[in-house]
Length: 209
Image 1 (cartoon, one colour):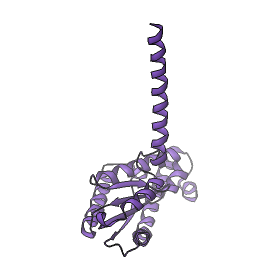
Image 2 (spheres, one colour):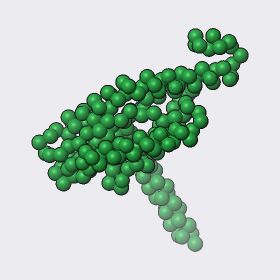
Image 3 (cartoon, helix red, strand yellow):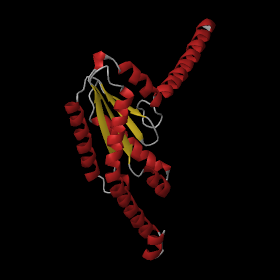
Image 4 (spheres, one colour):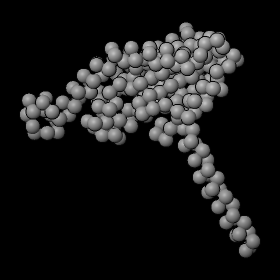
């Protein structure tokens, strides 16, 4: 019996160690908040997929609008909820071969191997429609998901994938110029409503704040 107990103790210790190692390994390549891949994984997978067998290779870049304003006005936990919901909605529109990454505080990227421009546009439109449907079912506008998106496609080895990513980013930033003003207005309106509900200050004072 004594020997068995000693063996059980060793097994338990090894199992605990293995779980800790798995957790460390997971956090090395995955985002702790959303569970999707992180920026390190994006850099690794970009190099792995930049090969003829995966062309056409499409990339989609997304940037959440107004996240800093949400964090400043309502706290980081509410901003975290927006990030988590955004990740879920992006994943909802992807195929099994697509890979999604959180590459910054409010930035996402999706790599789509063997996906041409038309198919990338369909993915783009599917994400947009899912976000609209989600927002229509969320009464609190502060919790709406609002993300600007851009995509581009590499079709041959002669093209530099770093430049393809930049094209997707430029497309995203152009959309952001048009969309961010609207999202900021929505968030500010929600902040004013919240202040009027929770505070005894006058409406004029809330407007000045």
